[in-house]
Image 1: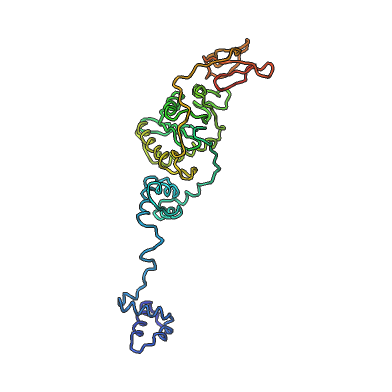
Image 2: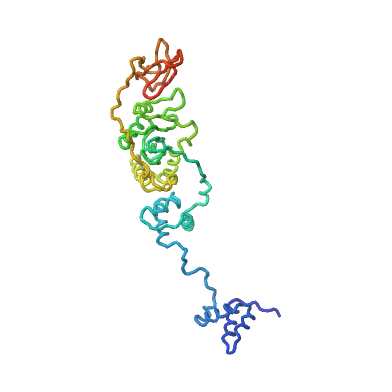
Length: 372
């Protein structure tokens, strides 16, 4: 007849019954049941305290863990994450320390908290790649500006215009525009210049109101206005958005933290959301490229004030001054040369170069040596 298989509970019950008998030899009994004396005494003690309940397996998880993050800290992490779903562990930690918490766990522990609560998509880390950063040495040396891709609202489309300081990543402007025309951009830039002053140079895309590398569209009324203010104009390489990498990155952050999942009634609704988020971005949101400082902590206004009235153009006594025709053509010495329609009705100067027979057409802070 085969041995009948018994459960652990039955074995333990048999053991404690025999061990509690008068004259029982505990060590010999433990050898028979193939357990250590420590284990044997443990089962006897548990049975004495709680009878059969004491013979059941207890959970291995401790009642408390000294290494577990305190519940109040974990709750604070989750609260900030709920307010800013796109922020990662390093930003959350920096923000919580900045708002008065004396201690915060490491970013890896915060990441574990987020993962434990299902707030991290494992696929997200596959999209993160390191990149090399370049930045100007001081605020206002270079501003980057561009339109974020337009999107629909209940009352038409919104064209977000963004202006970013290259050194500090400070968002100087985030405007909900109804179009991408030069006059609209000029109106927005004027209010920004009045508040923050003038940059040395502005970097922008090609096409639209910006102009670009195309000789027939190199200048626009907008870029001429900037040049007359004493602002250098620079264009990114065509089809290379990484030239304006900081503004492109700003656009991705804006999409994740403001636009994604939201519906807007109109431009006023958009602008209200933009203003609220811009304050968070500049004043609260830790920035990885700034060693988790905020953009506002690294920015100061320009020492170059905005000129409400631009001084008239002045040329030297030896310069030949001519007016540009409506089609962007200039007639000098009986010969007609094309410069740009953006200069129509303006007076430009012509002066000889060091090369015999070559003359330079100039105005503002640009030159276009296409007169011979």
